[in-house]
Amino acid sequence: MHKTGHHFDNYFTFPLGAFNEQQSAMPAQETSNVTGGRHPLNVTFIPIPETLPEDGQFRQDFPSYTDGLVEASPGGYITTTQVFAENAENIYNLKPRPDDVFVLTFPKSGTTWTQDLVWLLMNNCDFERSKIPLVIRSPFLEMNYYVPKALQEKYERDAIVSKMRLPAFLVDLMYRFNIMDVVRPAVMKIMNLVVGEAVRDLNQLERMKSPRVFKTHLPLYLLHPELLETSKVVYVARNPKDVIVSYFHFHKLMNQHKFTGDLESFADYFMKDRLYSSPYFPHLLDAWTKRHHPNLLFVFYEDLKRDLRGEIVKIGRFLGKYPNEHQLNRMVEHLRIDKFAKNKAVNFEHYRWLNFMSADGKFIRKGKTGDWKNHFSPELNARIDDWMKANLKDTDLSFITELEQQD
Image 1 (cartoon, helix red, strand yellow):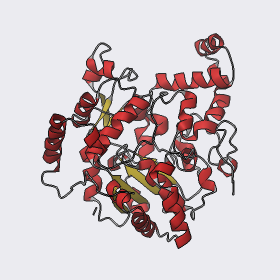
Image 2 (tube, one colour):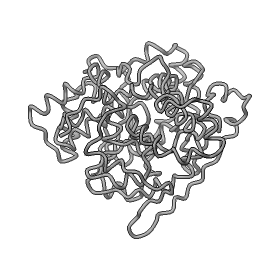
Image 3 (cartoon, helix red, strand yellow):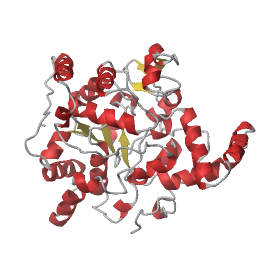
Image 4 (tube, one colour):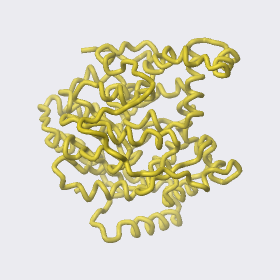
């Protein structure tokens, strides 16, 4: 079971170099090229009624969700915006390549950690190029489609006011009189330099050079139907107790979520499948049932924590990559959580530049297995235990929720 050489000290002026081709401007109209025809996605996205009223409890707890949540039918996948629903079939039709690798997780399951690990393996442990922000080296597949339009416009406006130094009233007039269409290419260029993934569309992803390493939180059924027959998928699962704690802090940190409630109410939303990327168990169990597929490797976060070196070797073997002893030692050191959290290429501190994150908190926190014990009351822990037991019934999936020793 379970070579650029540039430092990213100044996010705004960082030279993208070899990544310019990958980040080239594309037409606003998006299409996804599919050899042999387009695959229909037989899924409907339906607004969730209790998330819509402005004076309702949900909107009080999630004030940034001005459009509420939508739910996929069938499948139950929850997302924060109709923007994703409008583009879901295009994402579904992003054609995989034989040398693609998808790092697939439920959020806060060690995604960024594994993503950088996989990128290094796929790029011959090029630690110089790894200084380029991970968001540029390895895009977040659905990032461009899960932030509500109102927040997208806010981030765009903030970029113009703070970095192009235009008066706020003038920017508001530009929106009012539809002049933004003229200046948007310059704004996107600025945002690309800072948070390249945030404005990268599917056409740009299709033009990326191989090997591509993608991060995604989408369940398998919303990804290309030939994905597992074509590409490699590294699926990472983390025990739900630590996921709840980490996801709670993430929802406090990120302004597109801006959760205002306490941990207990957040855990209720989690167990009732009323959070972005929910539901948790169907996401994991779908991958778990496919764990014997030769192109899917199911990895437990807790195994990474107790034997990082061994898991690097295992993932490398799955990808056909065999780092030498020197490279392996460097990878272990590079991926140590305390060091990883300080790495500007992966810790997303630049997100504060566009007000994506609040002033308090960090994207990479403790990374500890068993931190839930510092947060749960006995009553909450008992309820979560019951919820886990009910969802794991008739499955052979189990979790490690505590470790005596961990990297």
